[in-house]
Each structure stands twice: as C-alpha cells, then as structure tokens.
Image (cartoon, rainbow, N blue to C red; front, side, top):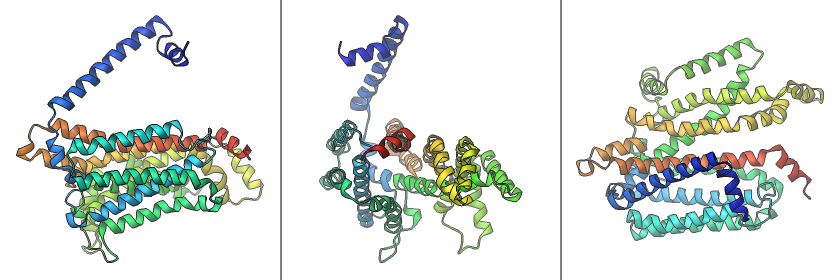
Length: 406
C-alpha cells in the first residue's frame, strides 16, 4: 500500500467511528470552503479594499515620503532572507543538507502565487506591481545567497549577525519618524498596518527584558524587591487593558509637564509594554520553577557567581521551557493592538471603522473584516512558525546531535 494511503488510513479511518467522524468533518470543511470561495469570487465587492489599500497600509502617511517606507521594507526583506538562509545552512536546522528543503520550496511557491495574484486582485498600478515583484525577488535572492555561502562564515560573525535586527529597527524608526536630514513625520499621521506593527514590535522588544527582571524579582530573597514585583504583577494582571490605556492617555498628560509628555501613540505603546511584561513575567517564572535547584548549586560549586549562574545555566533552560507561553503572549499582544482604536488611534481596526463610516462603502463590512483577519493571521502565523523553528533549534536532542557532527 502507498505510504500516504497507509498514513491516511491509520490517522483518519482506523476504526468505523473514526472514519465516519473524518468523513463528516471533511464534508463540513469542504462545504464551508466552497461557500467562502464562491462569496469571495462572485458576490464580494473588493473595491473598498482597492480604493483604501494605502490607508490600510500606512494611514495618512505623506505620499511624497512613502519612499522611506519602501526602503525600510526592502531592508527588512533582505535581512529576513539572509536570516532564513543562515538558519537553513546551519546543520541543526537542516538535517538533509539540501539548499532548499521541502518546506522552503513550499514557501517559495506560495510567495510566487501571492506575487502573481495580489496585483491583479487589488488592481495595483504597474509601479506597485514592479515593487512587489522586486521585493519577492530580493527575498529569494538573499535567501539563496545566505544558504549557499553562509556555511563559510566564521562562528564569531554568525554570533554577531542577530545584532543586525536591532540596528535595522533603529534605522526604521529614523526612516519612519524623520531626522538625520529627513523631513519629520508626526506620529499622528501614522496609521494602519504600519502603526499596528510598530506598537506591537516596540512592546514585544521591551516587555521581554522587563518580564525576565520581574520574574527574577518575584523569586528574589530580598523582601522589598520581591514585594514590589508581586504588587506590580498582580495590579497589572488585575486591571483590564482598556482601562490602563485610558489611564495612560489621560494621567500622563497631568503628571508630566507639557514638553515632557510623550505623544499619544508612544503612551499607548508603553502601556502595552507594561501590560505584557506582567504576563510575560509569570511565563518566565514558570520556566524558572522547572529548573531543578541542583543546577544552581552545581554551578555555584564550580565557582560561577550568581549572575553568571543565571545567565549561563538557569535562564537558558527556563526560557526554553517558557518559550511557547511567551510567544502566545506576543501573539495576544499583537491582537490587543486593536484596542488602540477605542482611544482614537487609527491602527488597522481604527482605519477599518473610518472606511466603513464612508457612505460610499456602506454594507461592505464583511470584505473589510475578512481582510483584517487575513492580515492578523499572517502576522500571528509568522510568529508561530518562528517560535516552532526556535524550539526545534533549542531542543536538547537536536543540540546534542549537532555537537556530535564534525
């Protein structure tokens, strides 16, 4: 029997009850998929997305300055491709030694389909079609070059490469907001997907170190440090996020002088950061609790100081255990950015409400919300895939196999 048929039989039709349940679910999924496809291709009116694609992407960002966003997108695409290739050329990530594993070929094929289908579906201008095609080609080329020649790089260079990401983030902030000779663009003009990704990435990057410090503080032997961490975590976890967002928008304006109060967008970003840090601290604390105390005692007996023991022995094991919960919190944080629309910020959901309030697009909420759902799903799926790849690379069995290779 064919291996595929054997696997389908064992997974879906092992018993008569399993077979009946599988057939029912397959029929239900097929009916839903066919109905959704018919609606999307025959009855849906996608003109609302075509006419407002720029608004959904960048909000009211000045049109004559959007070249900066395209430059940032190109830099991110190139660094993503290089990172992808370096991960694949590493023996821990690619066991069969091929330059393009099966999953990578599937991703590349999906990318080609999207590039060929998206411009026609959204009726993009020829200039935009060329830009999307060039970005796809840049991603594939940088992936191929890094996968082909990455194994020749020295280990110190590979270890220093992750520092490129924070550098790109700083460059991106300069490109988006202006400065260093570029025309300043007020945060009030940011919006759409740009604002959603910016606030989410800002909160994710800063809540991680804060969460680790809070988790260590909650387990500290110093009573004052421990109780400060406990009070902070319990207070933040006990308050709804929307309440904290309203407090951040209103209280900071009264507590700080006018010249020192941050912009409304940065107030919201800091509130998201403090909120996520409290939940992340509990995830890290669960990872710390999973590390046996003997690990700490053994490291101290070998002469390591307490900070060295935490950094080299305890935290690597704890963060590996807490990684799924942390990524789940990051995904929830990305989805929580939709609450920013309730305080007047035009992130994706805020832009959608503005578009649907236009009399010319009344009755097209299904198309708008489906587009938003696909955008959020794409971002969350990317986080999930990255998390699973990182878990695979940090798996102790994979590490031991990799260290035994010549």
